[in-house]
Image (cartoon, rainbow, N blue to C red; front, side, top):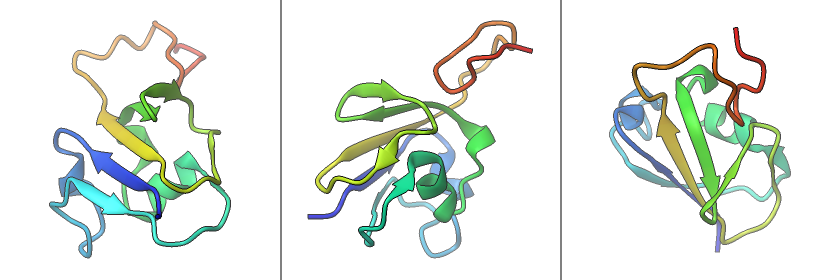
Amino acid sequence: MPSSLTFHGDLPDLLHRRWRGRHRVIKADSRRASIKDVIESFGLPHTEVGRLEVQGRQVDFSFAVVEEDLAIEVFPVSLPWNVFSPTPLRPRPL
């Protein structure tokens, strides 16, 4: 079974027209790609992502999506966003 991505908050509104408004989409192909490339393939700019979880574990943009049956959760940036605090997705604060 392919991996599924769940987009939280307002993120479904930012997806390509084909998936727009869907909170859950299926990654149909099995090619190896970074999680950043996977979410951008659905039209979501990575700059809108505040947190990524795979199987309940927080990951960064370099996480390689190679396995099937992964539950990927994509969360928006939480406001207010402290640009001076490092996070797994943005380890170098401004």
